[in-house]
Length: 331
Image 1 (tube, rainbow, N blue to C red):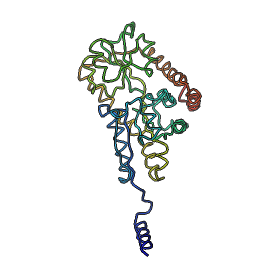
Image 2: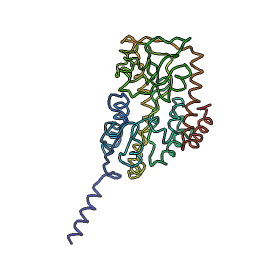
Image 3: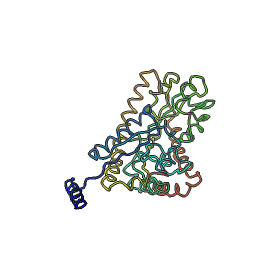
Image 4: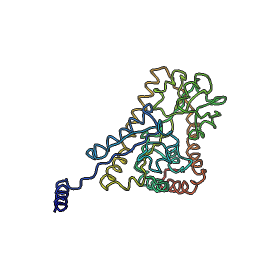
């Protein structure tokens, strides 16, 4: 009789719960950068707050960053389920899969990336690694999110000849044609490298240059700006599949909305950042437009070629490239 009484009580509690109520979920959320990187408070924490609000507090988060797992080493722990969600950039795992890295060559058109099938294609690619794509936020409504900060004015005759530029593969097809030599440094090393003459300039997203105070040792920025910063939010696929359909829907819906509000937010952040650089005495210097346009076309092709060259990614990137061409998003 006692067991029957307990069962009756359990059924009573179940009936008393609101229809469709879901169990509370605590998501272990891993960031590629700490809060000094502007994307972390804006996108990383901002996304979490929106999910918690949209789920009426049923989905909450705990946070970790590169102090736990270094930025470029987070992909495998995510696949293994050590963490549930990751905010990062495709450039950090292009040696494992370069499909999303190739999307750096796409225009800033999130709706078209979805309607073309490129979003679903990247999602399917990540599933090979037990990960679920949640969002592909792009840092602006136009591809003008990066720039060079250099120690002397840009000269259209000598360009970057004789200059060492802090850069990586993302910038290769602009830096090297301009005659520059690339030096790959972590953000924490750049100030001292500029100060000591180890490098003569830095290629970086516009947003973040003020926080690092590079304007103290490099007083010229190069126009036009170029490129889009592509970020990614992913979840461990097994963890995602364990969520209720309601919670899955909330996360995916907020992921799609994120692709819109992030772009608008970064437009303003870019403008504010350059206004601050000007206030700190950083002067504009300009690349010839015809030369610049040719460099951008070469860069976009080079990014697709680079992504396609990675072992294990070739056929997958070719598939994405074909979709992009069909949608008019790639040459």
